[in-house]
Image (cartoon, rainbow, N blue to C red):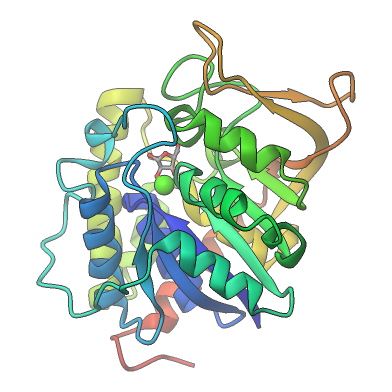
Length: 315
Ligand code: BDR
Ligand code: CA
């Protein structure tokens, strides 16, 4: 089993990442930790508990972390994810509780007690991960690898230069990219290939389960906001791409690069400056370039199918 800690800010695509991590039989989800990003921390934490409840995730701690970036004011993305951060479906009261530990402490605890077999999968701003490595630098040697959704080498989505997760907390991203652990950047260049097309949504809807219905409703809402705000016909489902890389590295091609985080630029703050020719420094990241689109959606649909009706995991 491949153990992961999913550090997220649900978020429609974070919700899909939770479903993929839970439903895939090769992944052991050891914790879901939350951070402020797409919405405020109270909302992203509630949303993580909502998704965990509908997916029947039990005995996996859901812990809340940092409620704002390291040094900056929080900027949220209600224009994409709605007022709740997970607009679209009607969720009941979640039954999955919030763990009493701070996410940063839980991340440190799990990594320090591990055999070096846990992969960190951040799909939100990198505040919790940066705080954890500052508080306990020995986690760098303990982590198996870090596979994050964030950044890009050809574009931004929040500014012309910056992707949202890095834009929100560039100082945290700089700490994470400099930490010296094996790191994969699954950025927009890759995730814009993971489009929830009508054909994909038909496949998910055909599963006919409550979880499948919620996934489709989430993606329908996401389609509307992406169409309105970014001119996409079908929305890019960013965050589960990072989970898919853990499940099967063949799902994407990666190229080694040195990635620097721009923290000071007037127009470029939050940019992941990606140097494929080692002019600025030695390789510190594998950078995702090309997605096996069919394999990715097969993994996603299969995970939702296996979740089935919560409590009744299909084989
Ligand atoms: C990232 O920003 C968030 O809105 C999404 O959840 C994803 O993690 C894409 O830029
Ligand atoms: Ca996210």
